[in-house]
Length: 41
Image 1 (cartoon, rainbow, N blue to C red):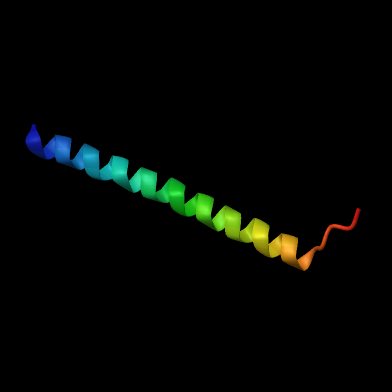
Image 2: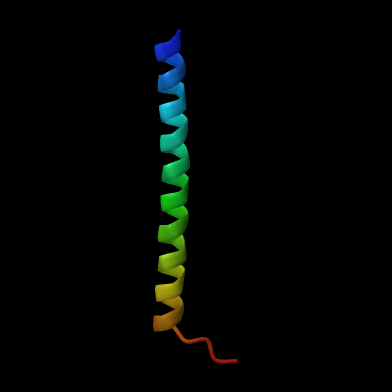
């Protein structure tokens, strides 16, 4: 029982880390694209 709970917690942390990494990568991509494609209004 205790091992199963620990595994669940570890997988939950991994999912959170994965989401955070994806968000950081997305922000970097957006910033890089904005820099290479200047928007002129």
